[in-house]
Length: 160
Figure 1: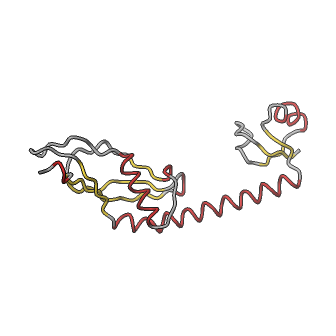
Figure 2: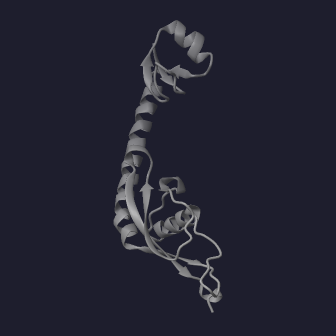
Figure 3: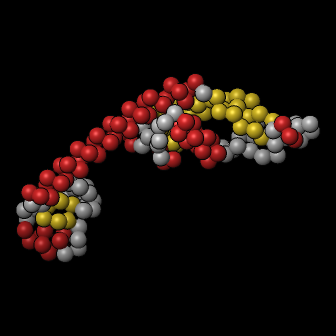
C-alpha cells in the first residue's frame, strides 16, 4: 500500500516521502497515529506539484543569494558607536544589529530574504575600525559563504 508520510519515521522515511508498506501496518499504526495518509492519485499529484514548487523556490532563492554576494562584498556596513572624550567605547556591536543592517541592505537591493537566511557568528565587537566578518547566506546545502566589511566609527554627538 502506498502512503504519504506526514512525519519523519525512523527506518521508513522522511516527512513528505511516498513509501510502500503493508496494509495492516498502515491502518493500525500509521493512519491511527496520524503519521501518514493513503497515497491515492490525487495525493500523489499534489505531492509532485508541491515538490516541483519547492524545487523552483529553492532555485530562485539560490539565484537571489548568488546575486547578492558581490554586492555585499563591495559594501561597507558602518556602525556608529558611542565613545567618551578619551576614546573609551561605551557599548559593543552585536550580531543581531549586523544582521538587521544586512537585511536592510538586501531590501534596498529589492531582494527580500528571511532573517533566518543570514547567519553571522561573531562575539560582540568593541574595537573601532574596519574588519571583515564571515557570513552564511541561505540554509542547508544551498547556503553560500562570503564575507562582509564592517566599520565601527565614533558617534559624532558624543565625541566633542
